[in-house]
Image (cartoon, rainbow, N blue to C red; front, top):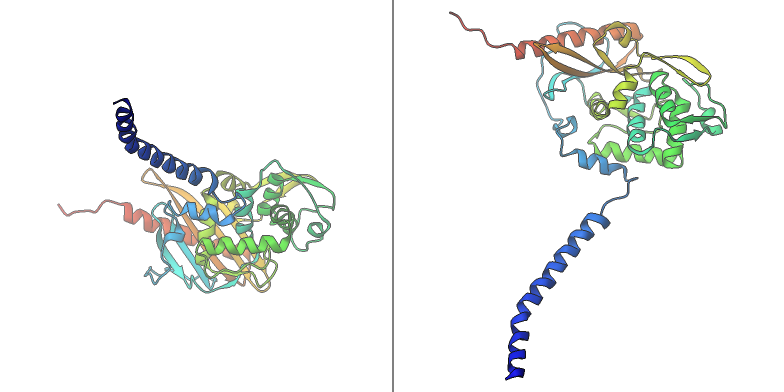
Length: 325
């Protein structure tokens, strides 16, 4: 009788044992998923894939969209204007035509650095970085700068030497950094963009107004980026006065950046944004105008006219309809 009782108890415990085993398998699978299947921090595209959960410009399909023409002439051959509050395309001019990016290339450089390097890291300037031509902040081999200092030099003075120093430190080499730039561009849907350098000196770094608006919007999501590109003047080692090359900041107090670019092949490029109150609501517009041939002062005037027109369009859309009495 005792043996029969034991047998019955053992038999009745089998379903519980199976259930407990299944529970352990589920928990084990969950732990494995949570703690061992995450990509490495250095996987540049991971941040972009996570960002797909938020509505962004790169989720807007770049197909044919009708927008009104500007009621005035501009000197640029390509451009775009967005309402960032609603992601409404307000204006476009050949937005998918690629051309040299010049220093607007640095919008991707700072994007990667802000995602992957600590701001207080001290970087030793290499001979290669110090020898970089074009705009610079006069760094010598062996000098030390923090990442944050280099970012201010990168965006205010458009420093090519800072760009190379950051690229080398993040990826180990200039070539490896360029590869990461192109991987991130692909992940963000910047299909008309190809990077050949971290600074934009090469005419082989090409992109479109549409793509520049994508990376600019991603950058603007970072508070430090906004603070940097909205800074008019700062001080750096050996440079007590570093003035922002974006003259639009000094013309319009509503402007919050973003980046100028010029080379002989590219002409004059400008990525800009401004925030103004409309009926008590802050509205931010983001614009890109590319390949002007007549200099920055006229290009700033074009940008200002585009902004004024864009905010007028938004105000009209936000105004309540009037009804005859």
